[in-house]
Each structure stands twice: as C-alpha cells, then as structure tokens.
Amino acid sequence: MRSAFEPRKPRHRLLRFALGVVGLGLLALLVMFSVFVGAAMIAAGLGYKLWKRRGRPVARSRGGRDVVEGEYRVVAPALLGRSSTPNAR
Image 1 (cartoon, rainbow, N blue to C red):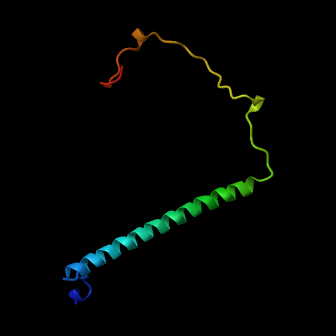
Image 2: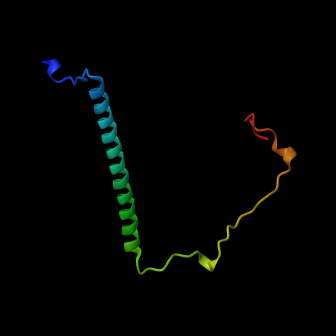
Image 3: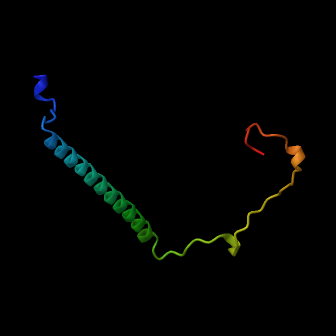
C-alpha cells in the first residue's frame, strides 16, 4: 500500500531532465505570480491610504520650522576612556 503513494522518478534521462525543467518553470511561474500579487497588495494599500486622506491638508510641524531643542555638553576625548570593543577608537 505504501508504494502506491510514493512518487517515482522516470528512468529515462531525457524524460527526467524534461520533468526537472518543467518543475523549475512551474516554480519560476509561481514566484513571479506571488511577486505581482504582493505588488498589487502594496499598491492597493497605498491607494486606500491616499483615498482616505483626500481633501485633508498635509500635517505640518508647529511654528513652521523643524527644530530639536536640547542641552548638550562637549566631553574631552581623554575623559571618555576606552571602549570595550576592540575596533572602536
């Protein structure tokens, strides 16, 4: 019963080669199909987002300028010490 469900390779060399080429062609076809389906899904998602946002103004930062505020202190290189990584300087 077990041998009824096992796939067998043909013994003829050319037939085995032809079936291998058909298998690779089928694999390439499935990969290309999945690439196109994925690209269509991304395009549909972007289109949906743009459609949802239509008519609304583009968000802008407050004050019209991009400023990051903060306090900074310069540390002398001698005070930093050596890093634990061998290639860091």
